Structure formats: structure tokens, C-alpha cells
Amino acid sequence: MIRRCAALTDIVSLPAELLDLDGPALPGVTAPRPPDEAIPATLMPLRDAVDATQRRLVRAALDACGGNWADAARRLDVDPSNLHKLARRLGLK
Image (cartoon, rainbow, N blue to C red):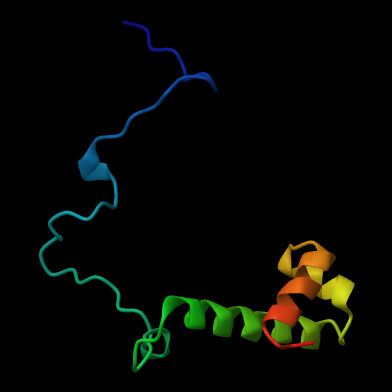
């Protein structure tokens, strides 16, 4: 039987054992652990954690762009007016 190459519109399926799924681990292989700094020592409300992360990223983008809000917005891939609104909400302006 002649097999043709898959076209761009063909759906290709892979068996589960070829995928990196949450299943039984291979013997002797352990899952990587995130760095300790990625796990907060104490849990906080999700909204506070999101605000803190956004505040940190906005400040970092502004620092990297020399305080230029338009450049920082491009770097963060957000609309400049939305960045200004976010900065006001986060208390950065």
C-alpha cells in the first residue's frame, strides 16, 4: 500500500504513550521541581498575587525602556492606554 504525506488539513493523532502526559512516570525519572522562589512562602489572595506580578512587570518594562510608556506598552504587548489605566489601578501613577 502506498502512503501519502499528510496534507496541512489532515488531522494527525499520536498515541498517548508518545506524549508527555500526566500518567505513570518512567522508572527512575522524577518530575522537575520549580525553583523555590516560584513558590511563595505564604499564600495570598490570587488578586493580590496577580497585582504584585503585574506591578513588578510594568516597573521592569519601564526601567528597560527608560521610562518611556509607549515603548513599555509595546514590550508588554498591551495598548498604551490600557497600560496607563493598569498603572493607575496598581498605584504606579
